[in-house]
Image (cartoon, rainbow over the protein chains, first blue to last red):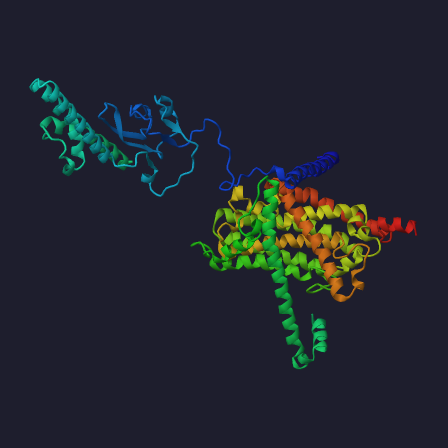
Length: 227
Length: 371
């Protein structure tokens, strides 16, 4: 190394150091350069279309189960029963938000647009169970029982009307019991003590149909536990 | 110290019966305690300022939770360090492991003895002041090397070896860069060096402006001293990105705290030496603090000295958060191929200047032109 290169090295070291120190001094003095967001006190503005926690407006939800079917990670589960006015009534609607991957497919697919992403992103829990969002506070079995009661009442009323009006004979009279069968089944999953209102005794058919809706949520719950 | 003891005994009649050595010993303990408190306070506040400066430079905020604006963060850190479990690795050399932090801390703290805080504020005005500082701060090498060796950890060992190589190498340019100040003052005592920079010239009486060589000498000293105290562009002994934390990786609790404190103590010593040797020490510009009443003169000079020293500390922090770390070979090349030759040339230059111009600096010559 010649003397010239040696001196150049020294000059370069001094110049680059000075340059760097000028930059850091500018950052050090200028308070506007701070980029820290002091999170709990200050929050960032949530952008439009932000996919936060899911929220289902159960009043407009039609229990079509599109969200359940489309969810790639199976985090949504719902139970429903057919109500007296032939519309589906939600018995339970749970989203396991700990499993959700915020893909937004369920929101896209929702026909009544009742399922939405909120802007919420803060949640903490000690157990995984707390991460399951229950959108219906009432117990599913109670709702089913209530709906069954309503259906039975409606059926009884219809039967009465039919009896009073036509008095046609066995065909008309036999229709209502088959309608109540489903309701009675749903009731069976609740408490047998609350059964009385279904006037007709539960037939073989009714107990058969009773099992079907009960099994499904149980299987889902088992899957949860295994996780 | 004995002179002070004698004057104290003369002034306070109650002490007449007490033997002189006892009074002297008592005074020594008191002075040592005062300096220790100062050192610890500086180190605590220094760590807070360091983090705040780092935050500002890196576009962050820095600690702001403990106390108003994070001012009490250093107390929280200190309490945490004291309360933490003192772990010793199973395969460590226990005696050396326990001894190492004390070497490091004593090495940096003992240098505070000759720090000229003010006109009369100095624990011991040794006639070999600079030599003493150089010698006693070398104890830090032993501490660091011992820590690295006794931890029985490859990173700690590497850090310790690097520290030893680095500190021993940079000792030479540091010493050579300080000698110009000694030559000008004609004394090794830090008080004499500071007094040699007083006078009517004010700022231009400082050794920094004495002649071009002393000007360079200051920057050479500052660079080399940063390396000698393991400050960041040269913090290879504890390069956290390659050696985890270097020599102190196995330390926890108060033993780690001692290493930490010694690092800040070294920082202050470097700031002190550059202030005393090149920036006029406690001299108040255009004003002789020695002529004031004892208490006011000392207060004035203490304030001026601390202001200068803290500015130097701030500049060291600024450098620390600016420059990236050197590689080991770059570090050694810088010491032996650049700093050592440059400081020797510089020393030669200062010596020749003093010989040719009979010890007069440029400002003095300009002043004599105007009478």
